[in-house]
Length: 295
Length: 175
Image: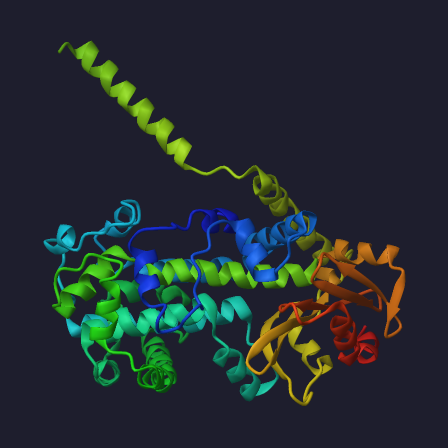
């Protein structure tokens, strides 16, 4: 195990490209995502507790739960980190998160190569698969029966709903256009197992994807996409999300000098790590919710 | 520049780099000690459960049937279900009011200690308040049932009332 949960949360950057890009999506899911800095702050924010002795107990229990590999929380963080760190990354995300408030699009432009649509479609569906698996690692399969479980999933909020909003916009709508769900569906339904095994994102997370082999794993990835596409299509239409609207909002935070959407997508892919960032926040929140209930 | 000077400067640069890296790594004394101790505690618990000195926690799913269901005007949403733990979120009009959790103290035996100084009973079981947001009962010495306020409007009296909506007697019989 590399880092403890308190270190992961303490080290979440409070400025830089990832934070700015998430702020830009606040208009889609108002108030849900917060730029929480520090483990103690997160405990207070999640529980509403200000009693220091209680905060200490909650934090210690959360750390213990995270450190126990059998509990699954570490695997969830690994999934969020791994599914985020491949595909088009230029090693620029770390830099972009360090250079402060102002992130220049032009300074990255020459390094950006837009991803081919098929590769983007595969990366998108692997993030969906990672989200589904991480959900089960973090929360178990809560409730008695399918209806209760669907109610649990439907209650996505805070950083989890922001992650899905960012997946929708940054990995779907901006790189692939308004009919991104149809495009992804076409690519995904036409995949053969070797398309997956030759994809770096898939190779990195494949040990965690159920299915007992590439054939079964492809089935899991396809089912995962099918399970989310209805929700996502409704999310886009009910909130009136457009690529132009998202880019317009991004321009309030990031110096984007270009409206070519595939370059904006490449820039976001190279400089942000929203999946990892919000994933760590989700795991932290759930650990704290459980810890305060168990102490 | 002579070789010695070059080596010296390189070494100096390395030292500065290493120092700045160490400075960047945020030490957090409040949690570092707990982090170290937790690893020993996890191992000790595992061994105690394997040897039978500590009971193995019940499956979280076995607690679902004891949570209040179908309370008019309220929504109960399943939130987490892990070994020895199940938690529901209580909502009204789309707003989070509280969390209700059942946990097996076999997962965290010292959680039972606070009930030794309990001065009140709820539903026939020893009860305690914790911090400013939590009220809990210990059922059959084994299962902790806790209600946690998530909104200022959800008071201690509300927590006590909702604890009694949990099927505490059923849970006690499960032991």
